[in-house]
Length: 139
Image (cartoon, rainbow, N blue to C red; front, side, top):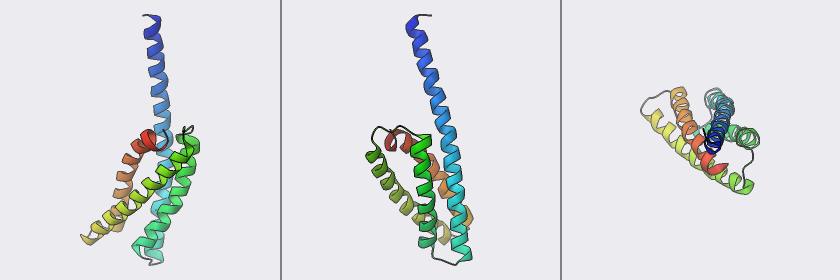
């Protein structure tokens, strides 16, 4: 094996290791954020009988602050453009908030229980957020 091939394999191995580490941190940060958001939503929506918009808003804002801090400092640390990261994170948050609230309300209208609707939307958001965080927000 030539020196160039060995160097390429080493670079690939380092990249794969870094990607795996990021994915694991993303799952931890995202999972704990999801639990915070989910529990807050259900408590506010059902225990306090607050509107969907307010319950989802409080839950999403709380989980978002927690998520941004850990994502920017731990999972995807070293973003080249911190101001760009914050702005794009906030834009993505607004899109996720309105899209998820709209989709949850549609699911509630057709009789899907709130715990399934909210959980399903959280899974969808988590999947597309990993790629958007990695390649757009914290690049």
